[in-house]
Length: 415
Image 1: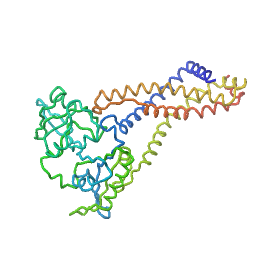
Image 2 (image 1 turned 90 degrees about the vertical axis):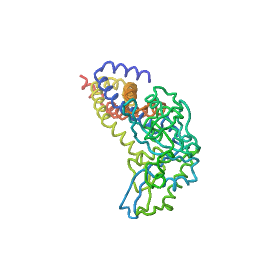
Image 3 (image 1 turned 30 degrees about the horizontal axis):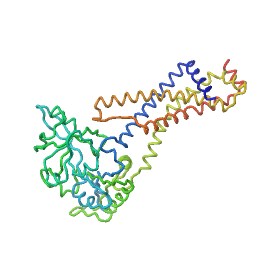
Image 4 (image 1 turned 135 degrees about the horizontal axis):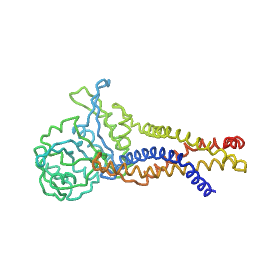
């Protein structure tokens, strides 16, 4: 029976070439956007670079200070003093890493001014994030404690300065300081927010120690545990410290709000979170994403429904003849649903090819530096699910409308 359905569908597609083209065009454009959006979201939530073990750590990157009445609010990155007093004493994490956000610096190479990203880290940073070293190695705890002027750079920076990547032992000048290169790592895209940079140096090489006394600044922290289930304990411990132990001397800002988040929680908080609340709003983000996807597919689905109804009405004589010879409603419904699914799968295949072309274009253009979009089973499964939903939404109603036609009326329409 299925073979007959498929053969009939293929004959119909060939006979109604104009409708087939219009349908395929609409399906291809819609599903291309869905596949590209799915791949970009997957690239952020499931990175393949240094943050590929992100299910094992939480990130603290925001700090909001306010007074008792929450009339004055001051939001920024945490300062080192805040992290030293309220993050480093935490017992739940196995490893805690402290580092600065990535900052833009300017350098001159052969009289040309270039901009690079510089990040200052501790030694634990290299234990948590899984960088791929091309040459050399990271700095260790002793080098960090002694404030040695050593640096890890990425491949792009090595090529800019030296036209080669094997540059361990070379010198590089940054912000009036000279550093020895001890390691070269693979380029990291900016989608991996906590790992991305061009150059990494110990933050103990800062020219002054004033940062140690700042409650607000440009620092971040990672809380790592080999057992992801224990990260919830780290979250609760951190929040309890802020609720019950926070003290801000010589300031009217007496309350602190900060968050130890995974990638999904951080995304939800960016969209729906409140600065003076510890609520993550993950459920809101998930519901919003589902509704947005359904709404996005609604308009093209309605257009597809109208096209399918028009296509069905042109086949009313065929429907009348088949019903007159005993075809059941369910057989006719399945015939048209399978036709729509087959058409949508063909459009989906075209969408996959087009999306690969678009994503490869983004990679080559450098619009997102160093980014690599690779398809995996997870992206394929989600995209296939969206394709099938689109096929069913746009095909079920026309199929039932067609199957319920009275044979006599259907034959009259076909005359």
